[in-house]
Image 1: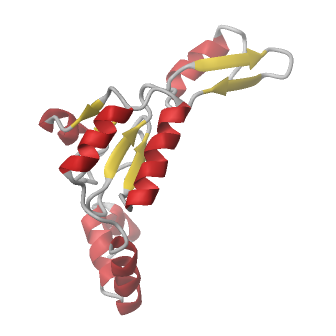
Image 2: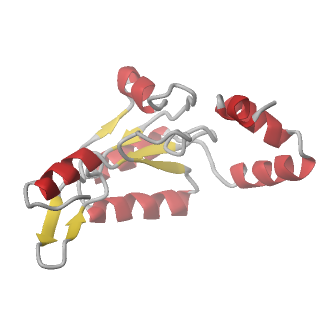
Length: 163
């Protein structure tokens, strides 16, 4: 199998990894440290942030990336609006042993933002999309994690900079 064929589907790559007893045991050990999402967890997230969804259409879109090579199975999307909310979510997930995958613009080609390991939650960075500032002397731009690259490029271009 050539590298292109191997990378065409994540399930194929995962199947290759699982053939190795070492990787299979390691993967099982890591995944066994997480527990499934419960109704109590959903209630907790609802009390933490305003934007929590299990809408099937949103999950369908969020559980794949634009090449459609990778498909996930997350059951919940969390959309925090502040870094403090992210901290609160991550602290809860760490304490409760819940798996979480951060998701930005979904423009990657390797499926890193797709929740494929089991009961992961999607931590959407969409609402963290502000450009904080730009020092036009040094050309240093500060923006939040959910900024779309095109938006950052347009902002910089308006000031005669390239990103």
